[in-house]
Length: 209
Length: 209
Image (cartoon, rainbow over the protein chains, first blue to last red):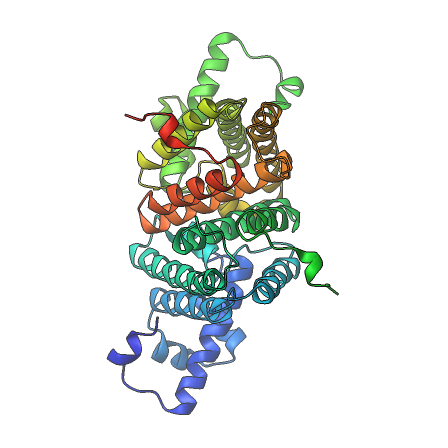
């Protein structure tokens, strides 16, 4: 996602840390409150940087927003890469996504998907970046599903790419239901039902807790 | 959804038509542009009503927003009730939802779900109404799936309520992917993959076109 690093003058290590601090603060505020309710001033305070530092790294809110989208996509893809490559991996991945929703009771929705809902109709550049993030997320899931298939653990009549798209859609929709209902239940139901249908995961094989 | 009709003084037929015109105009504008970008003034112009008529039916934007949520939920539930009761019904329902997304290339997202993404964190009353709408939507889907099961057309190891929740999550997430990617493809893939896994729908039985 960080193609812009090529165009941009290279940052000193200290500069890179300052920039990262701004992006992380912005990502947290935007996830909690939404894009429209987050000001550059609030990000500046949360990141503990000066106004001139903010302006140096992010001359306007759009650039910051794009950095936040990249950051959220990178973070998610990192956690989903090679996650589904074995039945143990699937179980661990399921625990990870359910715990993620449980920690907030769905508040804020998906860190990447909720940006899509807010920006898709008003910011074409953001929309394209979010679409690219979803593509990478689906590709990461698909990689794992291919390994699972090679091990004979995935039904052979299912295309791993199609299942990855379906899993991503189910995650996104399940998160929206959880966000609106303030409960992890619909999210867990949707993810577990799809996994049971596609992979026939038997949780009893993997004692939990 | 229309519990408020009980509390509210009964409208004359003409009054009910005027109110409905305002709600439909607001629903269309909000779906196209989002809640934050739609003003009462624009709704007034689109509905061709006077300022005093607007104020009479909707003293503030929140009341109008609640009426729009009810309207979108009622419309959707009507189209999903008893929709999945037979293989033919499933095929027709699939065509309906895919055509719905295709007509806009996903623009605006789900008429109900997109309101959830916009309002869940800022408007608890709206959030609760949207959650109730999702519950009714899932119940409508579940009704159909129960009939399908009674006909032996649904795998017996699947709970119809769980599958309804999963289907709703897949619709919502598929719509978000379609909205962000400006393509119906991820939506169709997600819906078709889930239906194939759960129902084993064979489209070849139902010649299309």
